[in-house]
Image 1 (cartoon, rainbow, N blue to C red):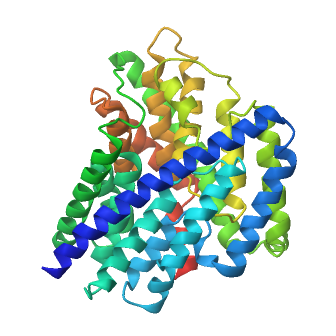
Image 2 (spheres, rainbow, N blue to C red; image 1 turned 180 degrees about the vertical axis):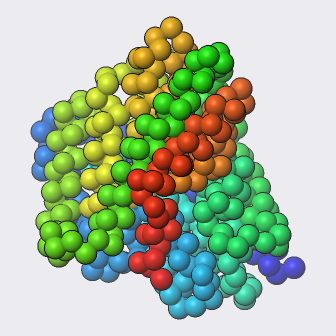
Length: 406
């Protein structure tokens, strides 16, 4: 009984935290863009300075709050009742992740809040279980993280799929029940407070069979290649013993400043398209509108620079935006067809290439767009992208990064 009460209370609390996090992130992005419109060159100073400040505080006081948050939850799952897991998912680490991510968005960083939401949500679930003296198991951690995905995107099925595909090393029936219960409760709280919304809005796009047979392999190969290269750069920064990389990592504040400057310059060059999560531009592309072709490449550069800086922040939402930019480029090859449908394939292809979680990619995009008509091309694109990415970067990104937190 106590474990069920803990799951209910934890899911409700983490849903409230996810909503507050989303609102804080949106405020930070609006504030930064307002500053940019008022003083167009301010990012050249503000962005590197804030990047350096956040990285310094993170490394000095809360080193376990750096980066995405998903690798931390994966590491905590291996020994959930140990001291390391308690530190990874401590309330102070979660608070630092919350504030640090918002500050990075306030600096114009190309970061997402979904990965951090996973760590924050798992932390809240663990804290509630500890208060009620319920034993901490991997199921508690996984349920918290999965509910965080569901609350962040309003995608309950994707939360369950993410738990199966990424968070759980050995998925058991008992864990499945915990995950589904936490996801359901978090979803109900989010539904009650934020309303019944579809993340990118309802889409209705389709491709004829002939076009599908051409676009699907193209989106899969391009997405897998680009996503694999992104993942390889991330893994190399974390684990490569190359002397030049060692010299860079030995000066973390210099690295953060350079990455912040890259983000600032890329944003100015793209007229602000590469800053923040990229949500608005991605939604416009899915609705069939057009934007500058620089959006995809600029978003990729900005996201990589933000991720390599060592600051808190996720890559979920920015990866969806990079994929949308890729899809826009592919859609130009087929100008007489529904561009929104090809953009969807670009999103799935690139996202699958980065995280190597094809099932999660398919479900999350389906729930975000409420479009079930594209399920077969989505499956084909995701599987091809996963295969290509595995050849470019053998280890899966989150799994490789989680090793540094064990």
